[in-house]
Length: 450
Image (cartoon, rainbow, N blue to C red; front, side, top):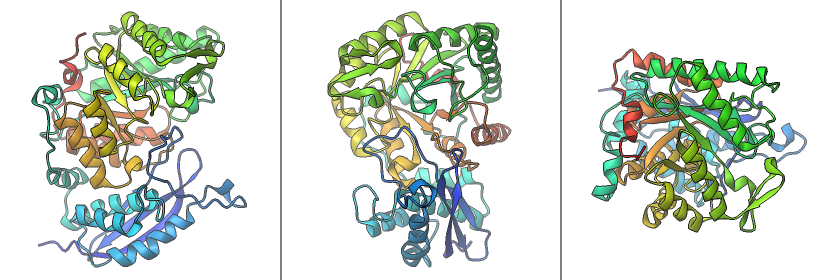
């Protein structure tokens, strides 16, 4: 019987893909190698996310240091957890949440708690001699099923039952907070819904990405420099022009828009929403109501092969979300990111009010592995597509690649194909593809009226 007793917990300050400090944690079980995890960080953050604890010292790293969070791991958290069972994920996470004692993990820091939570899972895997996918799968199997509507859960009937490779959703053109505000909308993405395997899907993505670069350059736009997540960041004449470039790139790659490859949008509308209106700077400081934003998105869905829209309305605009879902929910995946922040209570509110039909799953939004998986389970059981996602501030850590396969969540959103912190995850999936996990691909959207 392997010994999964925690012997040592250590943390250090390291740096993410934006050159900002973040927390790395190592958890070691008796007689085994340490398990290690690095915590990501977002730029486009929702108001309701768990708190990422920063030092706030203006004399060091612009106040962004995480030495306080690191010390919280080394002291309070280590004192509480050394001697505990690393294989009992739920108990470890519950102990840290209780130790923190705040609603949003603001005392110890969600970055401190999440680092330990993930590193403990890796430590248990090391002690047991199993793969991270196997360990995450075991933790996933312990998450209780939630009360679900049978009719709604038909949408996600293919998900969560067995490990599987995900459909990638990949950034082509960036705007918003990911590219200096050159466009109002944050990401223009593609989903290779017609591919029959993950490796084929990824090849198609690379082909389209290269065509986007070429088409932008030929049109006199910047087709080389990229934003935080690797998508190109051109200064275009309108938000809609980016859609035209992506469609043209799909065709230039010899693929069929809508059949082989569809488009996803991350509107990130919370960041241009104020006092009940949406301000679109890229179209001449245009002020739109919620209804007008829904009109705009519906018009684009009518004219472009859009299959997914993230944060089409702001995190507090519940009435707008309900209208968006009423009008487009049977045709398009409507993802709540800032709306749900991987929080089961927020997601339950969405389910009860029929707002959205999908949820972005980001580990550091909620701050522990157990809570993340609870939200993912709630989504699948109630017919909401989960999309396991990275953050704009990422590292070489590949946890989410192992996690999306282990849970059979079905979709994966990491950014683009340029920048190694992104490729680390995509390449890990290529390795896992050699283990012959099943791949559903675009079939997960068979309930949509396309």
